[in-house]
Image 1 (tube, rainbow, N blue to C red):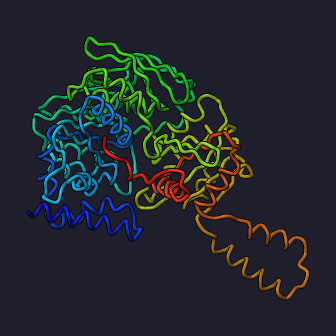
Image 2 (image 1 turned 120 degrees about the horizontal axis):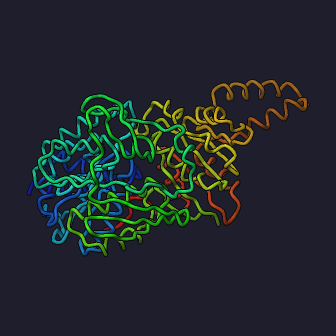
Image 3 (image 1 turned 45 degrees about the vertical axis):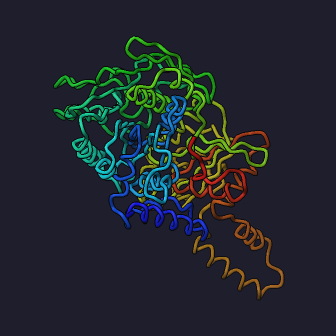
Length: 512
C-alpha cells in the first residue's frame, strides 16, 4: 500500500510539473516517491525479471546505454531506461516509478531489464538500492572539478561501490584506461575487459596532430607511482600502457577491436574479436569515442549472454541519442548536436569534425552553470588550434561566450571571423547606450560616427535564441550546422528547437 501511495504521489507531481510548464515532470517523480516511501527503488527493482545493468563513467554513458538497449531489444527483452530523468538517484528512481502501477507493482515486469545510466558520484548510493547484474565503466577524465574533484576522488567512490557488489555481478572494464582497468584488481567476481588491439586506426588523422593538446589524467602507476610508458597511444591516457618499474600493464581484453576503417562521417567499420569469434560491425556514429562506446556495449551484452546477431543489428541500426550526434532538420538545413563538456571530450569532438580537412559551419556554446561546472579554465586545455582555417562560419555563444572567443583568438582565429553572441547585453554597453540616447535628445542631427556606433549597439544580438538564428542564417540551405555545446547549452538549444517544432521533447521517447 505504501508503495502504491508513493507511485501515485510521484506521478501526480510529475503531471503538475508538466501542466505548469516547469519541466518534463520526470526527475521530480522519483524525488517525491522516495520522500513518501524511501525504499520504493529497492521494492520496484526486485520485480525486474532480468535485473539491471548500470553504465557509468565520464564520457559515453548515454550512447553506450542506448547501444545496449538496442541490442537487448533485438534479443527479445523489454528494456527500460532512465532517459526521461537525470542519471542521479532521483532520475533512477523516476525510471522505475514512471513504469509502476497504482498498486505499487511494476507493469509488465516479465521479460524486462533496466539499463541505468548512473552519474559517477551517485554510483555508491544507487548500487545500495539496486544490486546490478552488470556494471559498465566507460572511462574516467577530469570533469567538473568544482563538483567531482580530481579523478582520484571518483576512483575512491567507485571502489566503495564495488565493495558493496555481490560476487554474481559482472564488471565490464575498459582495458585501455588504466584508471578503469585497476577497478578489477580487488573484485572477487567476474571482470570482462574490452579494448582496441588495432596497431593503427584509419581515422584520417595525423599522428603528430593527435598528440597535441592531449590531456593525460592518468600519468602514473597506481601501484608504485612511476610514470606509465605507452606502446600505443589513442587519445588522452587511453592506449597500451605499462609501468617500467613494477611491471603493471594493460590487461588483455576479452573483447577487442583488431581493425578500424572510417567509411564516412557516420559510418565506421570495425573488426571485432571475442574468444574464437571474429565479427564485422558497422558503427553508425562518428568519432573514436563512439568506437569505444560500441565496444563497451558489445562486451556488456556478451556478459549478459546475448548472441552476436542482435549485437550487430542493434548497434548498426542505432540512431544518435540526445545531443550525442543527434541529427535535426531545421528550415531546409541539417543540425548536428555534439555535446562537449570537458577537455578530453571537446578535443575528440574537434578531431572528429576537422580531421578530414572539410570546412564546417559551427556554433560553439560555453556555459558555466552548476550542471556544466562553474570553473571553465579547462577550455585552455582544448585543442582549438585544430579549428584554425577549418570553419566556413563560426558563432560563439553561452554565458562565457567572451571567454571562449578569447581562447579562439589565442588559437589564431581572427575575431572578425566570429559572430559573438553573449547571453545578455553587457552593463557597460547598456550605460553607453543610455548616455548616448540622452545626448541625442539634445541634438537634432547626430554626426555620422555617432549614428553608426548607435546602430552597432542596437543591432548587437543576445541569447541562445538569437545565436541559433544567426548560425542557421549563415548556413546555406542543404548544408549542416554543427552545434557543440556544454550540457546546459545543449538543453537550451534543444528547448528552442522543441519550441519551434523541429524535434519532440527529449523525455518523450517510449519503451519498445
